[in-house]
Image (tube, rainbow, N blue to C red; front, side):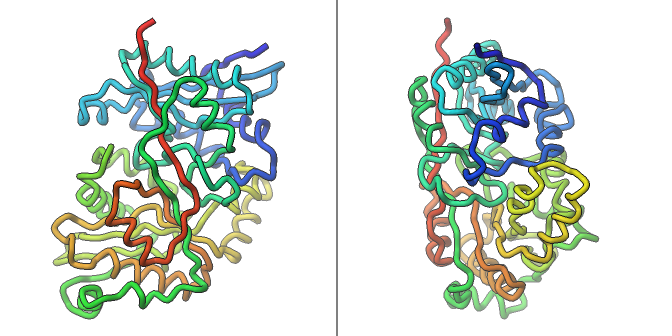
Length: 370
């Protein structure tokens, strides 16, 4: 007997711990962070009606979960009537998956949508996609991950794969940052035209606004991208204060105007696994251990304002970041998803010596009126 519970956070949070073996490299987000994202505190959902979530239970035990939401700004910008699913985690069971997917499809139809797509947790600038290859590879912070049975379950229920993506990993112990430098990059690094800065806790609020401006400008022509408002970006970046390592991010300014950014942070997943993604008495001890033992970092995104394209700024920034990472003792560097249709970013991965970590796809399905 399968029971569906709507907006029951306690069981929703427990699903991956109950449904997946401990050996799976899946890492759950911190419980408090997930609860905050699934609340009206999230600017995307401030009206209280544009999202919901479901937990599937069998004999009282959580066996699957999924979210459903609208991204109204995206639908307006791209002239869509699309609903989104996310946080799709499930045991390898066709019936359980079918009940969850039917629930979000019904919800989407009720919102007047004619298509549903996912995983989006919750926008194209957050965790995106369903892993289709690389199930043994350990993910970094802000990467989606799931077991090998999820894609077949989606396909069984009429979902088609589209929009291929890849996450990457660079072995910093065997990488020479000098390989990133050509004439253009050296000119930027050595010349007076740019001012370089790092992300600093005491100025983080002001710097986050600079980051948002560069992100919105540099990503303006990217597929599915919707400019982030100040409220949305502040909400997403609010935990950055206790995550950042001031040595490893990079900001570039031209005449005091921000023109480039690489947001690079320590990988928190080892810490989250050690704590079970919960705050408890031992959590501060685990965090201190993490601070002293961190060897993995991840680039959440990098962006260059369109006025600076073609000048070599991305390579110059990655040189500064990888040099700082090596000096700080980091050994591996992850990079979150890059679409197959983004040749410029894929070239940067080649220059970084990055190897594919996971292959991902989005999945979609038309919502036919019943």
